[in-house]
Length: 188
Image (tube, rainbow, N blue to C red; front, side, top):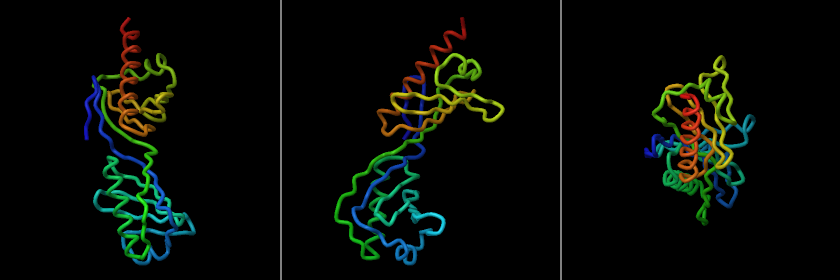
C-alpha cells in the first residue's frame, strides 16, 4: 500500500502488533510438533513461529501473549493470528476468544521529494540529532503524535513510532510543514 500525501509518499514496511489468546500455550509441545518454530528457553522465554503467507514472525509466550512482526497491514496481522490459532489447534489448544489486536508500532519508508541540507535542518529544526560521522541520516522526533523520522539528504525517509494510519499521515504532514518552514529560512 503506497499513500500519497501532499509532497511526500510513504509505504508501510512493518507493523508490530500484540494480542493475547487468553490461555496458556505449551511451547515445548508446539516446538516439537511444528516445523516452522524456533524455541530456545535458555536464551529467550518466547517461541518464534514463522508464517509463510503473509510472511511474518510471531513471538509466542507460554502466557498466550503474542507479538506479531513483519506484516504490512492490520488485515495481514489478523491473517497471521488466525494461522497461529490453526497451528495451536493441531496440538489441542483451542482458542475460543477473538483476540484483540493492538498495534504497537508502524515502520514506513518514503520520500518527501526534496534534496535536503541536513546540516541546516539540524540547526533550524527542534528535536533533531545529526552526527554525519556516525550515521548519514538526521533523526527528527515529533512529540504529538509520537513519531521518529530518519531523514536523508536525497529526501528519502523512514518513520517509526506511530500506531495507525491517521497518526502516520499526521506525522508526514507535520514533517513536511516543518521542513518547508526551515527551507524558507535557508533561502533567505
